[in-house]
Amino acid sequence: MLARAFVALQVILPKHWLTAITWRIARIRNPRVKDFLITRFARAFDVNLDEVELEVPGEFATFNEFFTRELKSGARAIDDDDDAVISPVDGTVSFAGDITRDRVYQAKGLDYSLGDLLATDLEEVERYVDGRFATIYLAPYNYHRVHAPFAGELVAARYVPGDLFSVNEATVSALRGLFRRNERLVMHFRTDFGPAVLIFVGALNVGSISTPWTGEIRPRKTGVVDALDLSRHPTRVARGDLLGWFNMGSTVIVLMPPGVCEWDDDLVPGETVRMGEEIGEIKGTAG
Image 1 (cartoon, helix red, strand yellow):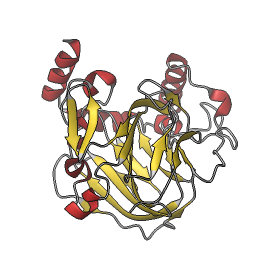
Image 2 (cartoon, one colour; image 1 turned 90 degrees about the horizontal axis):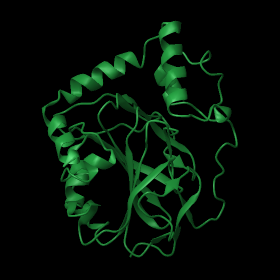
Image 3 (cartoon, one colour; image 1 turned 120 degrees about the horizontal axis):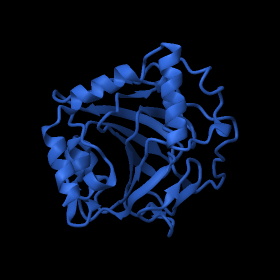
Image 4 (cartoon, rainbow, N blue to C red; image 1 turned 180 degrees about the vertical axis):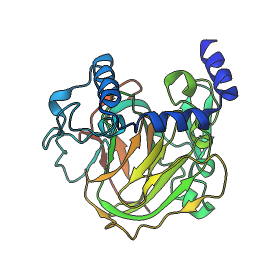
């Protein structure tokens, strides 16, 4: 009941306007204001400051810089098994499992289609029919950089405009098609085992998504799907390489083709994962 009430409230809220306000606040450079925001946030969410590369709060110019903070070298170990698929983020597993034909599980009684999620042509959708997926939620206190879960070449990146509903557990359990309704950045990769996809899903108060290839992408509720220029940065990535970051928290979805990957047994809803640790294993190549 409470989840449905929370969704109903979000329907009437001016979500893009609220997100724009958050974007501005997170970029205030006044030292007193930004230091207050950083220290209060770190204390409220018990952020581990020992692993942060820069001095907190003084060496961060804005709250957003702190939110998208870089960690010290070695703070996250990258699994060195050649067949490992690693977690691209720190976060909590919403769900991981099989794609049933072209339907992706969201929550009990709720799913959505691959075509709606990818917003692309049928041929690309067919690659992931009966494949596997993992959805990982990043809470506000998590490390918010996103890394490559496998080695490969980034062959396409598409920005899909959309809504900005919250992606917390209450909304996921009550709003049908949440992840195909929200704005998202869809990254397509070519790997030794076949095609793969990683999706940045925007959300309420996510001021923007940034990548080395695109720079900062600001939220846009309507418009056409944009094929983004990848020429400004090398497109080959090693496992663990930086793919981008959320300017405030959200969700990442990984899609794998059928017959390629098996998720680890402990990749279950509610499980906490850290970037770099194994979440699955490559067992074959796409047919």
